[in-house]
Amino acid sequence: MTRTNIPGTSPYEPIIGFSRAVRIGNHVHVSGSGPVGADDASPAEQTRVSIAIIQAALEKAGARIEHVYRTRIFLASAQNWEEIGRAHGEVFGAIRPACTMVVAPLLSPKWHVEIEADAYIPE
View (cartoon, one colour):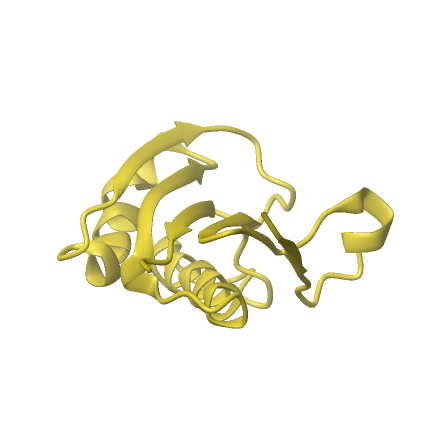
């Protein structure tokens, strides 16, 4: 199968050694996407920004948001799970991917959320 690395805009990609997304065959794996540029936004708005970053990566890989079958949501604090979950549901409510929420320290202390996604492009 052919592997395609999909770059993002992070200056840390070459330093850390990661791609925003990787497509292998019809599978697309999107790296953890934080709310870059929305440090002072609400948890819900940070979720929307993170999903927009994911959507852009998917499109560069030839996928669409409705191809997402799994998301992982990393929360800085469990107290924001409902607000973040509702914002996730604005996009994924009808798609209903498998989803996991985990509380973990995030890269920036201002971030409330970071999200990963996996997608499959149908034949």
